[in-house]
Structures are given as structure tokens and as C-alpha cells.
Amino acid sequence: MMLSSQSARLQLKDPSKIINIRPFRTSPEETKNFNKHIQKLQAQNIVEDAYSIFNNPLFLAQKSDGSQRLLGDFRKLNENLVKVDSFLPRIDTFLDNLRGSNFLSVCDFRSGYFQIPLTEDSRDLTSFSTTQGKNALLFSLKALHLHQLFLIFA
Image (cartoon, rainbow, N blue to C red; front, side):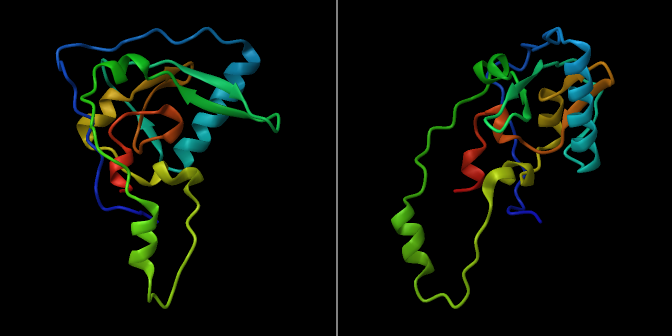
């Protein structure tokens, strides 16, 4: 289910600056975990094969429950993104807008950013590579901390 019909477009300060960073070195066990995470994201249509000159490294972070989370190092890309300065909506205003509603539901935003599609040109910017090949994100990832995305939820 899509929360928004909008697509997120990542706008570069300097379009001529190419971010192409070598993947981090991984152990055979980490490589197996990477592949498992990537296959899961491909099955959910969150990533696709990519043919981009951009490359961003990935790494695994240990979660408190012992499992691992796949993260991308998008610091260099973020340095070249146009910053969007805007305030988050006030929660009290949001709740006031719900007054008088007959139906309320709860949304789980744990994977909410997976529901924001990236524009075609933005997908190239988010590409990453693994031993299984090169992929690009179809949807934005909260865990990757890309700028400009929180406004879609506002």
C-alpha cells in the first residue's frame, strides 16, 4: 500500500559530481548476510538491478535483538544534495484535523519510507554494489538517512 502518490526526487547541488565509492570489505559470513538482505529487498520490489556510474557502500549493523540491519553509507551523496529546510508538522494540529472523524487507523512507519517511490533519475544516485551485482533503490530507505524525504510524510 502506498502512503503517497508522490515520488521523491533527490536534487543535486552539483550534478557533475559523481559519487562512486568502493564497497566495504566483507567477510564470507557478512557477504552471505548481504546477499540474503538484498534478495529479500528484490523480492519486495524495493531494489532493482542498476547500471549507474554512482556507487554507495553498504554495511551491516547489529540490532539490539542480535539480528542485523542493512544500511547504506550515503554521507557523500548527502553532502551533494540540496538541503530542504522545512518544519515538521505540529502533532497537535494533525490531531485537531482528526477531530470528528468516524474512523481512525494506526500506521506502522517502521518501513514507511519503503512506501515512497524514488523518481527514475534519483534511483541512479542511490545505486550500490555487492558481490551479486549492482542494484539501485526503487524506494527510499529511512535507514539510509537520505535528505529531502521527510517532507513526503508532512
